[in-house]
Length: 71
Image (cartoon, rainbow, N blue to C red; front, side, top):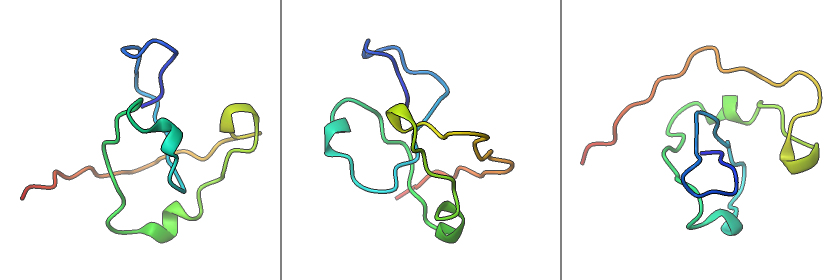
């Protein structure tokens, strides 16, 4: 979850990580993984601006389903 410097400031923004980011370990909550449809993740516009922001019009999530991983 995206947040400000304060650890408890997370909100509804989130990061989609394309590679491991060890610098975020222990600082952010990881709440999902792609189990199907990775070809669509690979088509997401990648950020190139400051702080990894997307320059220009960002992609939007039109439909997404979150399922619990019950074991």
